[in-house]
Image (cartoon, rainbow, N blue to C red):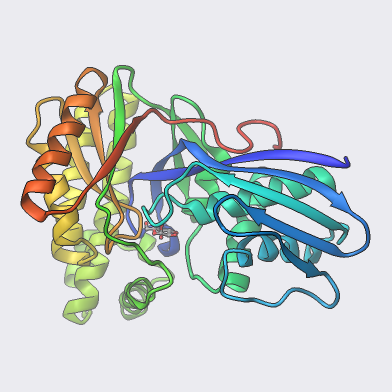
Length: 362
Ligand code: GLA
C-alpha cells in the first residue's frame, strides 16, 4: 500500500496495578480516545514525522539506524526500528499523527502512539504478525529504544480492546480474554491535573523492590507467590509491603473476573476500593490529589468503586459508575476536589471501546 491510516486507543487500567511486569494479571479497557496516524511511503530511507500541536515536520534518514533524542519522535522511530529488526522492509515513510488523548494523564498516550505507528507501518510494509506480536514489539520499542521499563499492559490494551468488554490480560501466558462489561455501567476517568512522569525513578524503584521480594522468596516472579507465603517469608519490610500490593492485586483481578462472569459488578467496585487502599498503604504510589478524587467519587450515590489508574504518582483515577449518575458524579467530584485542593480536575465518562486490531490480525 502507498498510503495507510491507523487508529490506536489509550487505555484505562481498571484493576491489577503494577502486576504486568510481575508476570501477573490485569483488567483494562481501551478508550474511544487515542492516536490517529496517516502514513504514506517515501522513496529511499527518508522518514518524516509530524504531530498536531508538536511543531513542524521532523526529518530523519534510516541510514545505520535511528538515534534516540529524548523527544516524542523516539516512540515512532523505536517502533520502525523494531519492525525492521523483525524483518519488515526498512523503506521510507511519512506519518502525520493526531491525538485526542490528554497527555500526562496516565492514559497511555505513548502506547497509543507506538501501536498506531506499528499498525500504519505494517499496512505500508506488510509483515505477517499476530496481534500479540504487535503489542510485544511496541513494548520492546518502549523498553529498548525509548528506555522506559513498562510492562505489557498499555500496548496489549491498545491492540486488543473490544467494545463493551474489558481486556483480561495474563502477562505470564500472554493470553487475552474479552470479559463482557456490565450493561448500565461505565467508567469515569478523572485526571487530577498533577503531572505523571513515567520516566521518573519511582516506577523503576518499585519494580526493583518487587523483583527483590520475588528473589528473597525464591520464586521467578511475584505471580508465583500467595499472600500467606509472602507473609511467612523473610523479606525486608519495605519490599514485603510492595509485594503485598502486587500479590493482592492478582487475587483481586481473579475475584473480579469471577464476579463479572456471574453478573455481579458490585464486587468489582469493592475490589477497586481495596486496590486503592493498598496503593496508599502498601505500594505508596498514590498522591493526596488522587486520594481526594477517590474519596469524593466513592461517597457519591451511583458510584460502585474508584481507584488510581496506571503507574500512579499523579495522573488519573477510574471510577465504576451507573450510566445515569455519571454526569452528576463527575460534577460533584470536580467541584469537591477544587474546594479541597484548589486544583482543576478534568474527566470524562466512557464505556470500553475497540482496540487498534479488535479482530483483524489473529
Ligand atoms: C504504567 C506502565 C504499565 C503498568 C502500569 C501499572 O502504566 O506503563 O506497564 O506497569 O503503569 O500497572
